[in-house]
Each structure stands twice: as structure tokens, then as C-alpha cells.
Image (cartoon, rainbow, N blue to C red; front, side, top):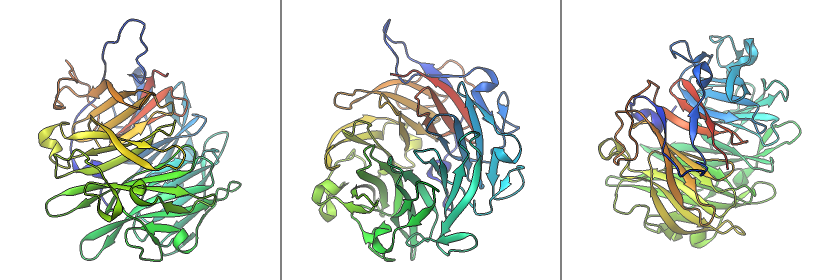
Length: 458
């Protein structure tokens, strides 16, 4: 299994800092960690936190649509299940509290959970889907307790209890279910000889009654860089997948990726229209993709053009459909330049067609991991290496971003004077942040710990 990009670095600790605001102003998006043991869950070594069976380095956190349950996947091969009460996480007891590829945590055993990655919950709350080192695992979700029950799986070989997955021979990355609940999309980085790679997107029809997944046949079931393996070909799908986003109206899918050469690393951003069956068709001409040099008929987009090394990260589409946001940064030079070479790019989106428009701004940020709050009022970025979590207030008129506050450790060097602290609290390096659908709480995955924050809503 490929090592996640966030594991390439080592970092320190986090605490919360809210910058002053004008009297009477509402500091939308500001986070305050819950007090005492309610403020975090982790393994036995997580002092001051509620003990939980998480099972190693966290891959992702997903919250159910009604904000009643949290699901925490770990790379070692497990998904832990929690109820949410006033934001705090409480793990279900016994085997209902987790599913795992082994019996080590006292979980329900699901051997197909090899190298668990992203977990996502269907919009109707009936199912959970987990990307793994071999494919996708399906679960039925108990609507009352949130417990998970194995339903099925797909992998490249169709071994064991799994159906055959075509066009995706390697591990699955980010997953997303369309808002109408009819389709699941999964991304993957497929190795090519001798040392290359190509990005791919798998397309699955979802049975809304059972949650069962069925990959669409032939070229409708997958899209990749060169049209091999019976898949459709798409432009600006480079070797390393980065981000995946489905628009709220379910009309479009967007994928970011990166391409590395001897002297540079470039970003690719691809835009697809989505049919009623979930089939993806790349938008024509420059509306369908953006790259640095405009090759292959894409829009030439100067993603911080002063940097020759530039890698893409997570994607987000604003709830109002007016913009697409892409986190990107120079790769390892982040260790030398702080956040000075990290940005969030904003591109216009045509709400009717989903077409990518021009770059409307580059906001200095930090980190490749990014999420937008469901209300569209806040955007968060996370840097594993520098232990930084930035919050930006989003202006609904035009979509511009303004720094609101940050989380950092006292030793972090963000490259500016924005984040300053007098003391520090030891926490593990942050990987991602997830906002509950009701917008009331945020969950920060850091190492083997989930930190819980209340959030100021719009």
C-alpha cells in the first residue's frame, strides 16, 4: 500500500487560538476544544483523552448525515464506531464498536479491510463504504445504533467474498457518493512500468435499497489517463490522485492529480459531467480541465507559477456551486519555506454546466488536506509537517477567503506572524479535519487521536 502523503513528515503539538474579533461580530468557524476527556479520544497512550479502540494511524473520519455517529478508519485495517453526544465521541461497546481485519481490538472481524483508507457514509445514512489497499468494502449501517455490518466488497481479482473490480488493480483512494445517493466514485493511482503511475476513477451504481455497489460495464465503469484496461480516457489525470469532489447538485465530478518530472511537479484538475446513471463525460475543451501549460486542450492556469515544484491536494465545491477550491503546495520544500509556498486556488464554476472558469485568486494557506464546512462559511486546511490548521472565513459574495484563526504548536513556523502561542499542549501531527453535517462540531484526526472541537456556525 502506498504511504499517504501526510506520513512523509514528522511534527509536534496543537492548541487552539482564536484571534480577536470586533465586538458583536460572529467569529464563524472558530473552534474551541471540548473540556477534559470529552476533548479527544485515542489509544491508551493518549493521556487526558477518552480511551478508544482505534487501531493505529488514522486514515479518515466520517460523520453520519444526521450527525449521530462518527466513523474512524485506520490504515492498519479497522473502522471504529462512535455515537456523538454534545459533540463528544463514545465508542459502541463490544464487537459493535469496531470492524477490523483481525481480532486484536475485540472487533467484528472483516478480513477484507486490508489497508483501510477513506470511509464515506451514504447521504441516506444506510451504508458506509471504505476504500482499501485492494478495493472497496461495503457495510450496512444500523440506523439506531450506528453499528456496521459487512455487506460485500469489490477487488481486482474478485477473490473471497468480493466481486471483480476492473480498471483499478491498485489501492483505492478518496471515495465520494453523489448527493442523490445513486453513484459512488472511487479514485486510485495505478502503477505503470517501470516506475510510473496513472490516475483512475471507478464508477459504481448504488442500490438505494440495499446499498450494494455494481461497477458500470466497460468504459462507463472507469476513467483513466490513457484509456487502457477498457476504461474511458480523460485529460489532466496525472500519475498521483489527490482530491475528489462531487457537486452538491450531483451534476459534476472533479478530480485533482499531480505529475512529477525530473525538474518539476505539475497539477492537473479535471471536470466531468455526470449522467443520470452516474457515467462520467469530461467537459469539452478548456472547460474540462486545467493544467499549468495548457497541454492536451486544457485551460492554461498559473497555479502559483513562480514555483516549479507544485503538487495538488484536496478539492471542494462550494455549496452554492459558484466555485471550486484546490489546496496545493510545493512538496518537501515546505520544510524550508514554511507556508509561504502553500495556497488555496479558487476557480469559478458555471452553475449550469459545471464548467471550470478562470482562476479568481490564490490564498496563502498551509497543507494539502482541506475541507469546507457544510454551510460554506468556513474552509480549513491542515499541514501535517508544520502542525498547522488554518481556518478561513468564506465570503458568500464572490467566494473570497479571509484568515480567521489557526491551530498550531508553539514551535511551528508558518512563514508569517499570524500564528503565535505562549505555551503548547502535546498532540500528534494533524492529518485531516471533518466538520459535522449540522456544522456544530469539528473532528481533527492527528496520529492515533481524534480531537473534538465545538464550532461557531453561521
